View (cartoon, rainbow, N blue to C red):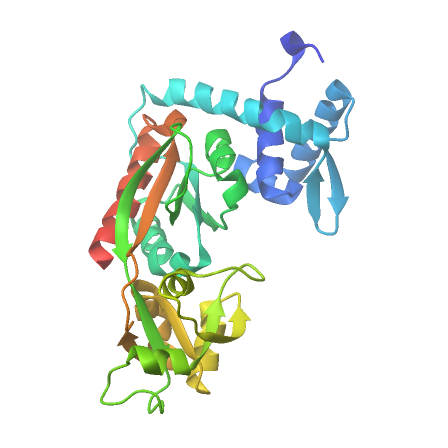
Length: 303
């Protein structure tokens, strides 16, 4: 492939299709027609001699070649965009931009609605997408611009990532009303250990923060069930005698429908810190700065 003859707009198409895994979705965010995006992909395939993407079901999956070039390609595009943006004011009422926020499911309901409400009221040209975080690729996703920012727990990442603590949380215990283990509205450690529990985790197994603290004290609880979503676990709790340990901030949001009791955890664990992450490439990007401030303000207001 001869770089001198390459249309750089084709790289924007590659970036969009890689991020969206769909020609249709890529066309929407690029404000192009679907045939135009398909034509651009065809030109790139001819230039590289590689299919770039293969279809698996409803998604386009990147080839090994695409995966090998996407990070430096996206970094170059971001560098060019930063150079242009550095001299342009970010006016939220008139700018057109799409922000992608990586965030855990447990925090999406807590923070993202406020971001979307603010944006739709003040910024008709800004779109927001909340997507899951892949811990293994978090740093590369931020570097490549697949994610603009991410909200996550503290992680051992390189100095290329910038971070700030935007919230501090603590664990609480939820159980149904009139649970037999709860006397006078309080939960003892003995009752907690004698009860059966449901755990929420995206993993098939693995120890939780509360189990790690119990193990440190040579104690253990009985886990009867694991679910992927807190909303499922809350329903289980409301209809039986299993208990659920979860962050207080999220419990305030999702427990409204289930109306379970919210009790203090009867032993101490380290507080949970939620961190806002962005890449050093985006440090001086006015748009990224604007989004970081919005998210920080929302978490501060929610307390």
